[in-house]
Image (cartoon, rainbow, N blue to C red):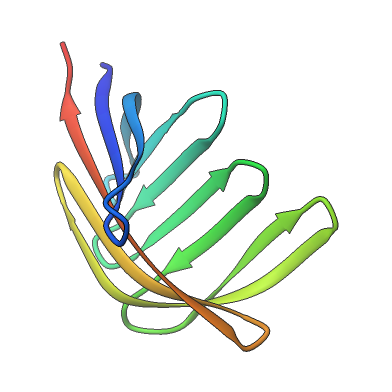
Length: 123
């Protein structure tokens, strides 16, 4: 079944993706949402208490976000792989929506990100 996916940057209000995607349940404990276009591809692995995000654009970003503890991630650039630390401030996942707000730390610099992923079934 095809799903209609909206990924919104809650800080800027910008819609980063809007269109078709796939949603599948794996092992009964995680939901995998995949979507994208020519410019970017995304995979969100959504668990009850944390999530993993893969974002493939000019750079490849792999993050694990857990509101209970700091986690590690990587940013792959044409110049090499950078190790980052994530600290999730908010993670809220229900059947048709996931919202995450986190701080990404790289060599002492920090930036806050806030995204919302909405999923609707499309017939």
